[in-house]
Image (cartoon, rainbow over all chains, first blue to last red; front, side):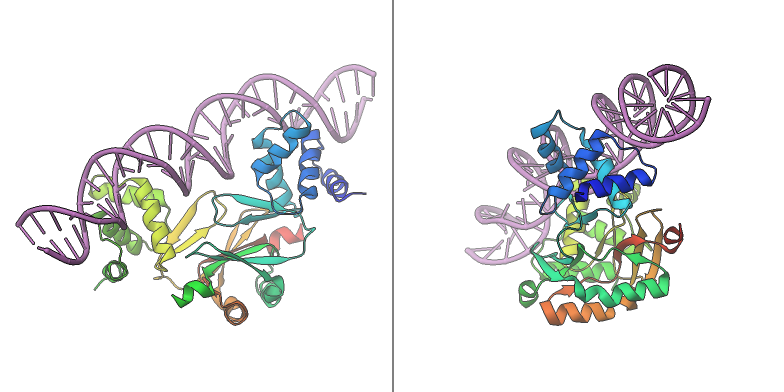
Amino acid sequence: MTQAQTIVTELKKRGYRITPQREMIVEALTRSPRHVTAEEIVERLREHTSAVNIATVYRTLELLWQEGFARKNDLSEGKSVYATFQHGPHIHLVCRKCGRVIEADAAVLDALGKDLLEQYGFQPDLDHFSIFGVCADCLDK
Amino acid sequence: MTQAQTIVTELKKRGYRITPQREMIVEALTRSPRHVTAEEIVERLREHTSAVNIATVYRTLELLWQEGFARKNDLSEGKSVYATFQHGPHIHLVCRKCGRVIEADAAVLDALGKDLLEQYGFQPDLDHFSIFGVCADCLDK
DNA sequence: TTATCTATTGCGAATAGTTGCAATAGATAA
DNA sequence: TTATCTATTGCAACTATTCGCAATAGATAA
């Protein structure tokens, strides 16, 4: 069973209807080795089939995010990127001076995740996570 | 010397030109007791003077953020909010299920900030910070 | 003061993402 | 199967934000 099939089955179990559009979007997302934007998903689908409307792609990605099957990430590039969990957890350190994105090990967030759960009962999404700030190069200047 | 004057003086010292628009935007931002959107700034300014263009407001807020005089925050409400440092540090826990925003003490991030600086030379902006996840109520369901 | 240089503004167009609504089509039960 | 209910889609309009470019106006030096 592919990852896409697993997700679709689980969505159905949760009461969502399974449409060809949703199947194709989930398929495209799970096949992506990296983060993708909604626009990229539409382009990829256009290669195989008559286009799926971009509003549907946004709605489906939002659904997948809400249901915990995808990560949503704002890299401050003016658009959101989405991904499934295939590639290992990591966080993005985004420099607000030069815009550079450093990939850091998600392990630095372990303690934070534990605290938030214990103190606030809040389960944070801590992989594929963005933190804004100033990078080493820009600090020197 | 007001906070607005301090910021404007410092901007000038860093080589930026001081325009009436920038002065008014900084003034409006520092007077705001809460987070504000670019649109709210424009409305506030319209009360006193002929309107400042919204593109200028966006550009100025971006500048203030880059220079470290303002926080920029995405609450996943479809718009960014900005604030200065007058009100104490806190973080937002945004539930991706119900959209609820919980304000948490920024102290939970102290250890993280230290780690990022030591391991990556990265100085993160950790007050007025958003973390997405699932809140206690939605976890129960 | 005045001239000069170029950063900043305003405008309108472009991009990213969302939303209301009527039409379509999954899912369920008969 | 077929009918029914309503979730989902597509479309077009709308909101938030950015960008290119010509006009304007701070800052500096003469």
